[in-house]
Length: 328
Figure 1 (cartoon, rainbow, N blue to C red):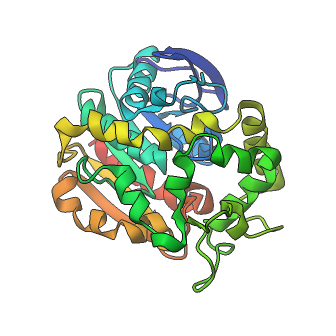
Figure 2 (cartoon, rainbow, N blue to C red; figure 1 turned 120 degrees about the vertical axis):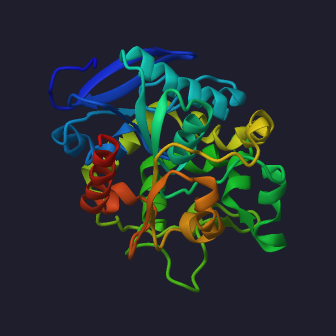
């Protein structure tokens, strides 16, 4: 099987359908492709790369298009799910591999799931972190999101779908916004029960109005924050936010897969305090039907949204244990 020499974090770029795709790799062995979510980068896998490499895998973390050092197309519809899946396939091929295990977090979980659904010949297994798999279908997404929250507040997805609106809030103080956003969804710093929910915006307000201030979650150092902020200060947020602006297009594109299960071996890990886990509990309950190849579903007590960074040791143990079963 093709491999790359053992090393530390090895940065490289490969050619994707829209241009450059930046990735960081470590180790040799079967390929494990790691896909981050919003608003992050390859760096969110910094605690997984060396562990997977030590366990005998070629661990590769990508910058999703629109992030970091990867190409940032201008058109919003260049961030549709079909394009992001094509990027993942291009990475596998550019690395000289025939197949990979794909693991994603947050939006990366949805991208990983779609990759496995559309290309089972390439993605032989899928690991999902924080966001459970829900098959394509149902009502048009914007119609659903517009109803969430009611007349008194607006759901963050609807807020993020309006071109320029979130950028105007974030880009004057990227570092401060990211710090608040990460803290708002982390165990130990997220708002307590009864406090305003940071997933919503009041009329005329901003998301950051509900973020914790002047506090970093335990998993995030000032240096870590500098890395994330530096990337977005350089690229801006539009590329990342365009993922939200492509959801109705995904609904149309993936209509032929309505209700389709993912049959490959799969794994789910979620945080008990994460809204993605609690709000989508029905999707988790449906796993026997939607993920018939599921090896295990784990909910980590006292854990928030940024699961592989909040609880790296537990996530690494679960990932490497699951990956080992794929070699049997």
